[in-house]
Amino acid sequence: MKIGIVGLPNVGKSTLFNAITKAGAESANYPFCTIDPNVGVVTVPDDRLEELRVMNNSQKVIATAIEFVDIAGLVRGASKGEGLGNKFLSHIREVDAIAHVVRCFEDGNIVHVEGSVGPIRDMETINLELIFADLELLERRIERSKKVAKSGDKMVQRELEIIEKVKGILESNRLIHEKDFTEEEWEFVKLLQLLTAKPTLYIANVSEEDLVGEENQMVKELKEHVKDDDAEVILVCAKIEEEIAQLEDDEKQMFLEELGLQQSGLDRVIQAGYKLLGLITYLTTGPQETRAWTITEGTKAPQAAGKIHTDFEKGFIRAEITSFEDLKKAGSPSAAKEKGLTRLEGKDYVMKDGDVVLFRFNV
Ligand code: GDP
Image (cartoon, rainbow, N blue to C red; front, side):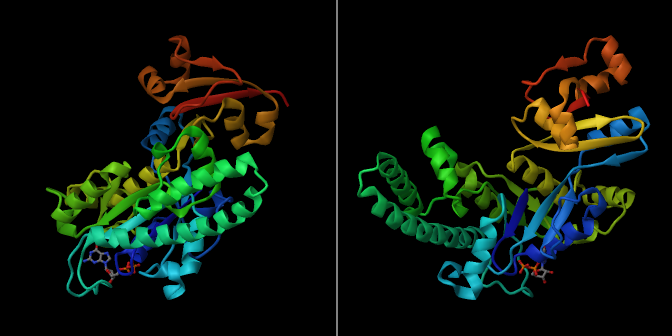
């Protein structure tokens, strides 16, 4: 699962991406990850891991990770091929979600491609390019379908109606959201792989001074603007993130406290990105290791077990599950069992975030 970082030039994308690669995860633990200079792998911060490690005296801890892709080069006119535009747009097709960086800091030394700082205009500039690219794709699709539809195929007729609906939304300069469609329509819309239908979060890149205290006017306006899209806006100062990413954990904590922050902006971006992708975490823990595993929401126990090993899925018998919160309250796995907080779940159990699991299986 990959998140693409997009935004106009000079808004702080590379700075943020540098922070991501510097904070980077040890690649040995994440063999699934792509080796590509434009891809950064980061571990997903999760305080529960450390608590479980202490509880079970685990020798090591393995967090889960997600990938960010630096998609630089999007400019006004990209959909018409400006600045290698189409190439960058095709990179966006390959990601599962979008983190859209918007410049909300003033700095006379850093040129703004549009001549002045204007977060809403900037954001709309990029979104318009995505809209144009999708409209073009839809036109081609309509032409193709119309040829087939002549034979009176009901299915194709229905698809054409849905495409027209999507087109209408895009032509009024809006992005595509599930809530505007029926379930049947949405199943088809998903197949179109539209750029404008990708889950999106906005990263407001603010100055160091604006990171704490009252939000600056630009951020307020941005939040108001994306409210109807239910999109999250996360404040970061990319420059500071780059510095933080180079620190050791304890130094990092001290630095954050000095700044008056609980968590780094990057950590918040990672956690929001994880949620945006519809991912949840289950945990395994023991003396050898405490580990977080990523699954998509709605995954059932056997498939979750399959993440660890295919044999776990094939030979699945049951899962012994304690929620992290219950385990914490009980103080240890054995105490949780005594208190009846550990459940036995079968193959139809839908996993929840924070489930601490022991799988039982036949070999
Ligand atoms: P990109 O073109 O979007 O990748 O932008 P860069 O990350 O290259 O940033 C453009 C310039 O803005 C660089 O000189 C950065 O040092 C600077 N910059 C990035 N983030 C911030 C920030 O939060 N505050 C300030 N003042 N400058 C920043």
